[in-house]
Amino acid sequence: CLGHGYFPEEYLDSPKLVESLIEDGCSVDQVAVGNAHMVVLTTEGEILTAGSAQWGRIGNLETGDQLFLEPVEILASETDIGQIDCGKDYTLALTKNDGIIFSWGKNEK
Image (cartoon, rainbow, N blue to C red):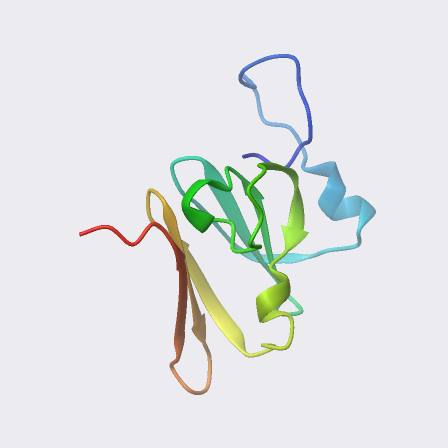
């Protein structure tokens, strides 16, 4: 869920640059993490996710986990996203001007 791709180790014990963001020329405005996923809001307003796809928490209609940060294609036309946040198994995005909230992931009581 860290966006680094595959690592044989189960965890990283020291900070490591998320190189895929540099390679793609992405500048990050915000980052949020859930139990097993990560969400990034770029300075251009694009939302990227990585991690467990269980319960739809990464927002791409995929069933397989994402090892690298990928855009949330359904929100590609939404350029007005101003804030992101995560819960354990869900993700939220808030628009700047209209105050509209988009949500996806586990919808549990």
